Length: 344
Image (cartoon, rainbow, N blue to C red; front, side, top):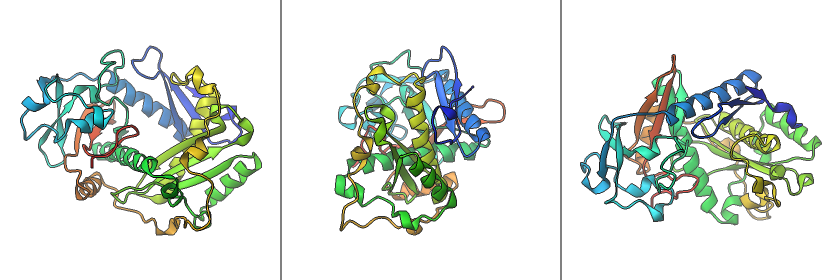
């Protein structure tokens, strides 16, 4: 475990958990309002990745078109990195049984379950940790996994909008009245760091926020601007988590110790704030935070919300149960991801 908090000047606790010789990332990170929260977050990320890297299950080797039509996903493109460059429906792959929210079976591609990046390097299936989560109960793990999928879908929708659409998502600072945010803004302002907040569009109605922290004085450094995003049924918690992730991302590049901090990331200004949206413009109304309301938080409630938006194949796979925790993969075919657009 490593405490990297004081490599930056902001002060939000950020810790790392290091797993040498892993099959994916060796360095995992956690952040939070307290040191204990940051430590636990880093450890749980390590637990999740370890479980997904070493997942073993008996699967069926088959093509999508040869699977039982009642069990295969409606579109193989829902599992692709790029919806427009999906694996061929006639190509054989290994399929794993996941449990549909309605009790049935959904066959999911094994490459979308495993995080063993020592193999399947050329796979056109999306191989990411999104939808992988841990909970002290099965319901908690499922809820957290679904929230991550909902978050990534909303961020993709935000990214697909033009500058004017993104500006219309920016929060009106005057409508957000939390003491912790006011204190943080004052702290960041004293350091010459800017904070912008956006409400990402989510068809489910679950609050999803994007936060950007930027510091002009850093010029060409990759931490001149970083972004965080989060989804949670409680708008305040979602907002805090997005801000905390943006600060954690800044520390990721300052520390430079995570496996995916590539040398070329440190070449040239990233311009992340302008990539999100240009400066606020006259005539474009901002979002009133008080109009963003909490939603029911259970995993079944989230499944119902997804169903109402047309995402009807939600499924779960328990991949490990270390000690008293559940490590779960959630699948919501039809949602977008950071790379794949949502289904039309």
